[in-house]
Image (cartoon, rainbow over all chains, first blue to last red; front, side, top):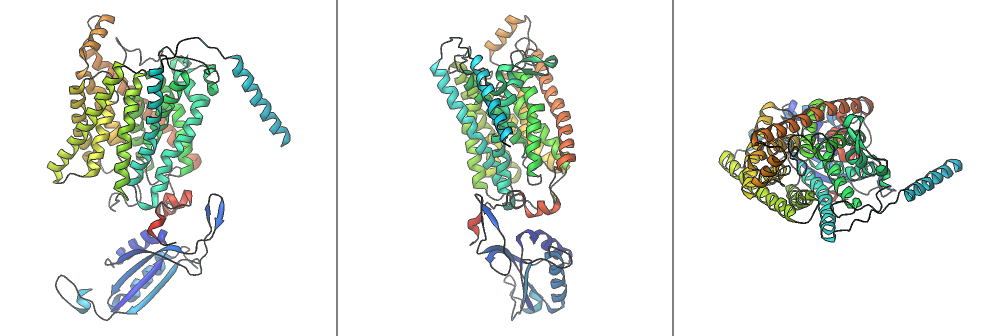
Length: 115
Length: 442
């Protein structure tokens, strides 16, 4: 089991979510986060240009069985890129971490079946 | 550059001289009571526009809040300017073009009314500014029908053209003393504060535009939930408060008829709201806050044309029936599946039509007595015919002309947002802003 954590652009959320659902990956957790990477966005506030320190992003967390890791990554890569071929700075990142255990609260089931 | 600036100064000077030449005080006394109330009403109706911005702004998704609020606010800018230049003249000037609209050179930049006092005892500036608020809120109401999916620039052009071609002529027909709907039958079609002019025209135009532009992305399969019902409720509250200026101010006086309109307004709003939550409670098991707000609006919309002629009992019946009819209209909309996003047609269009027709059966006897003095043998059914005619004219006229305007604006500017802009949200795509920065550390 793996925990896939993807940090994506806010504006890509709908697309990523729809692509994941189309790939039959329907159990996801979404949250608003802020952070900084390589991206610099200029904003204008009362005519003054500035670069905010923290940029709002969306974090998607998906716990999957090993067989689904590749398809999940592929789907996110395809749908979160803002430019089909190369992508742009700020498109985000995907982190994959081993997942020790997964327990369904309702039944107490454990492991792969609970995902 | 310098030359052109000089020319602008020259033109401005010319305008000033021109207006000085047309100053004329006709020496009518100012009724300070009426003037004070009309000033208050003007401010109250202006307050409805932030109210509408909040009402609509709370109902859309987080990414579209500022865009939706701006749909109302930008109308305060665009329509106010247009009104001073041409709108007031087109609405309240003498018939031109066979009565299609009005015109009066004195109303161009309002330059000839500087010292005018109207027969009602109020300065004409006050009347003009009061009426301009109605012109502002009407196109802003339309925005609810195509919320979350139109280009800001195209919207600006749309409301400007719409105001000149739909609102101003309709307003002239219904409210100007030589307007043809104003003079139908014995005492004219009854539209006290804008059932046909404001609500039916906005609702029908919204429906036409929504049908032409098509649904939002994901509608109706994706659930689209309000981002903040608290500001929606505050907005509905402000609308209710502002409506006292809207209706009671439409008496253009401060006296008996003002009081009658005020009472009718309160009764209809309360009955409408109550009816809506009762229907919801019976139908869905829960009384929602949004339902209460919708009921307030349905009641207020229905009593708008009627406020001057119905007594509290009639207002109660209007509020009750408007909520029932609008509730059904929204059920039908959900069945048909078209995307009138914030129910501009479902509440303003349908409620306006219901109010303008049903008010006939609750007209106070003294009004009918007056009417039959003017035209002997005048009956309720004859008045109903007049009401139906006024309603049909405003439905057909606003539908046809709006379709034309939407088509042209769409061809020139691209009215509907591109899919990328729509997904990113109006706030980001057109304004470069976000409504709720505080939800994220930044």
